[in-house]
Image (tube, rainbow, N blue to C red; front, side, top):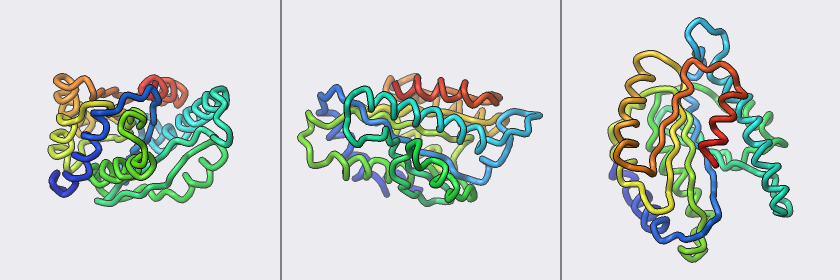
Length: 222
């Protein structure tokens, strides 16, 4: 996928976020639902990446929900706005929370190849739809958590976009899995993170404890 296909969406979001001064943070999730997620997360393990992420996200949305409840947000169940990507398409499944995680997860199909840019554009559009009616200084900081397990077909385009990220936009990349694809993705994204403090890369490769992954994801969203 060509970067300029989504250039207007990305540019508009970056400009808006650059002027944001709010202390409010909006966490959003971009979730890899490609076929490779069926593979084990650790060599020699039988636990698939799907299973460990599902359990980890259960802890994450429960924690976010508890924090929103303590903050006194009426009617807010701590939903984590979620976009899935696979096979060159993206789906906005809206908020994940403790009350709907099981049902929504059951309808996700893990298949297809890895193209991340359609998902990134959909995530930015969702942010705009939700907060675009606010003044720039009233829009929350966007913390985009990306869970993926390897190098995307459009890694070059995605890395180029990440270099442009600034203002109040932050990208947190959580890598799963192991092997050549994992290592290539980690190297590509770490090169960007080394020159842009708005991009962070954490590898959960070879980790099979969902609670350890959940703790790491919550730290990335914090």
